[in-house]
View 1 (cartoon, rainbow over the protein chains, first blue to last red):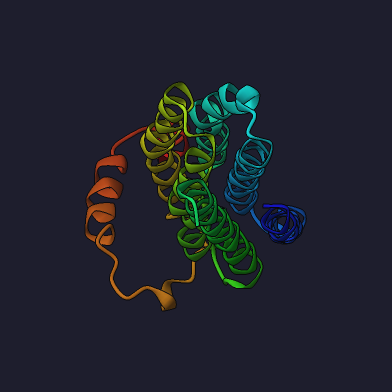
View 2 (cartoon, rainbow over the protein chains, first blue to last red):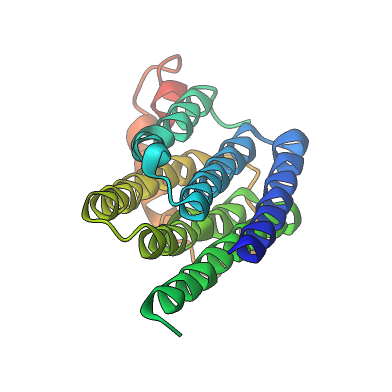
Length: 87
Length: 132
């Protein structure tokens, strides 16, 4: 299981880094909102992998909260961006 | 192999597959040309990747309460991910960011003309607010 944990950690760090590149480069705020959603999914995957690796269910309520409220950020950014109108 | 070892092996395969989908989405986010195709790539870790990781986690924890919690996480994610994708896609559409030359079909275009025609009768200062 340690081998799996190392592989998954490397993969998730790579995914998070690539996602951060898109968050920094933009170009529009919607790109950043989509990339932030992916970063959240990577974080959820990391927390779930940690729970699976240590056989410890302490972090599972955090996953429930993240899955429930994760979409609020994208939705509010989309509303905010739509009020600006077409560029 | 004992049943425990088999379950742990399957759990490890699921976890690695979910992480691979996350990496695929990261690569696609950097390389794809516009908002709509990046949204397409972003849905992979949000739905399939997350379900694989949760399945791996459930196979590893193997208790009733934990599996119920993980099923709830999956259900909430399946219910909320389309909402966010719909809002972002609908907001991205009238902007110039999307590559219309890459679209195979555009089912919204016919409706947009009707919406613009409706909006033409409204006062000018309120019309940008109604974009969504």
